Amino acid sequence: MDRNTSTVDAVIVGAGFAGLYAIKKLRDAGFRIQAFEQGDGIGGTWYWNQYPGARVDLECWDYSYSFSPELQDEWDWSERYPTAQELMKYLEHVADRFKLREHIQFNTRVDTAEFDETRNLWRIRTSDGKTTLARFFVPASGVLSVPKPPEYPGVDTFKGEAYHTGRWPKTEVKFEGKRIGVIGTGSSGVQTIQALAGKCKHLTVFQRTAVFVVPAKNHALTKAMRDRVRLGYAERREISRITRFGIAAPMSVESALEATPEEMAMKYENAWTNSQLLGFRQCYGDILSDDKANETVADFIRGKIRSIVKKPEVAQKLLPYGFPFGTKRPCLGDTYYSVYNRDDVTLVDLKATPIEKFVPEGIVTSEGLIELDMIIYATGYDALSGALTRIDVRGVGGRKLTDKWADGAKTYLGLLTAGFPNLFTVTGPGSPGPLANMSMSIEQHIDWITNCMTYMRDKGYDRIDAQPEFEESWMQGVQDIVKRTLYLKANSWYLGANVPGKPKVFLPYLGGHGTYRKKCESVAQAGYEGFTLSKSTSNTQETAGAT
Ligand code: NA7
Image (cartoon, rainbow, N blue to C red; front, side):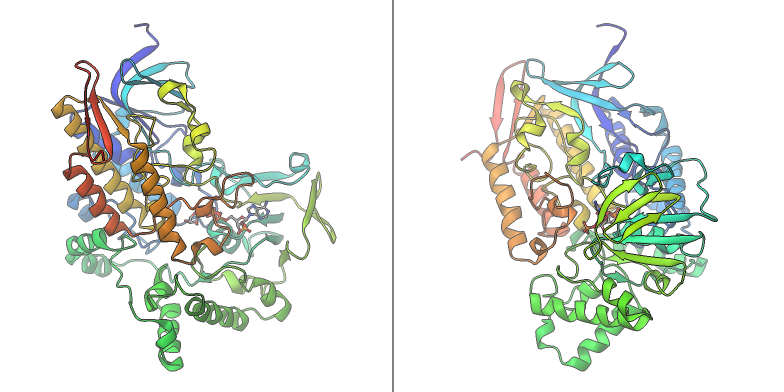
């Protein structure tokens, strides 16, 4: 073997929430591991998304690791919804506390991964020109990590500053005295807009689809608040593991259609006042499955928008229509709607006045040139499958992953894709991933993967692959579940609808985090039902669950 080639048990991609936990778990289980991270620091999503106002939209108690009670006890969150900077500090602390950095090679991109069928090894080539041979390949590269650029003529001709929220520069960006345009009004856009209003000469928001923004009610945390949560923390985490969204939030089973107007008004007012991401969806059991029930929430929030935004013509543009509430991830924001009462903020409704082109001075819409000094793209991501398909992955018979997934990503259980043995997808297509608490989803996946690899090592297996018929049936199940909901009515990133040319297939499993966890556990207990495990040396093969 030459100097440029090394061998490990597992290559991990990424040093965010998932990558760090994968490093810890696999190393502690005795595997030799090597992690590669494209950035020059820890943090993953939070490393790249340092844009103004960037915060997580789940409470810190839930969006954090649960694997270590000591970590939980020693880390003091300062706010209900921590900033990207605080989340980076937390992840850096985790990396130091558990001595994870020594396993990470920074500033290194994984370019290709090719499965060697004769030896059951992945041959992984990185941007430093080196090759690593690994029994297992664990891309923990994130579900929202490949920024999606805007698709307009002349984008590159703009002569001012231009940034994507998902690739925010590490150097200071100055806003004072500048005319800034923000394209996109998803979570990233909403947070950026709130942070920049009043901090620049003029802010122009280019809105393609009006979103539902519910109050964040972010606040600083006191010691008393932290102590109160810590008292019941273990139980809170246990409950989270069996719930639909991976959060200990009680979900109603009542129908909105059977509620009296007074009762409904009271519940919605309460959800608005004591808001959190799931607040409205908690009120009734049919919000995400019945159009009429959903419309009651949508209508309530539209009423709030009308009452906050003073100019009726602006309020009208901000009213979300055309997709049910909750089928695009709702955004959190305390000042979002009132920002539009400022004279130095302009809303451009791209449905009425579309962008025609970019020019050196700014953006030309159907109503003329808007001169800008800076453009911020808050245009989202090639979600779920994007990070993995950016790597040139070739499985059995040299088949390209991009060819296999040309009509939509497919996996069995969201964990392996048939024909690509020993490649574990973390919180990717076919798993609940972003439709549940991401940190919970990550821990559940990495725990399962570690147990599976340990089982294989103990039994002497060196290859695991998903059986195609189990994969088909799992993905069919994913589609069957979503058809019973309203999610297909929105052009969301869950569906790949935000990326031109991407197949429109709903990728996350909607059956709930708790149900999914049980399914994964029962598959493992049944000797990895639906997977084929084999040993290259003795040529033994065991097919669990073959029909
Ligand atoms: P999102 O939620 O995908 O939002 C992207 C926004 O950018 C959304 O408003 C899009 O409008 C808009 N967009 C995308 N392409 C264009 C073009 N070409 N022109 C105009 N507007 C465009 O990404 P975020 O980064 O905000 O949030 C991602 C997740 O991170 C979020 O769900 C949370 O989980 C955290 P559209 O709605 O597609 O019409």
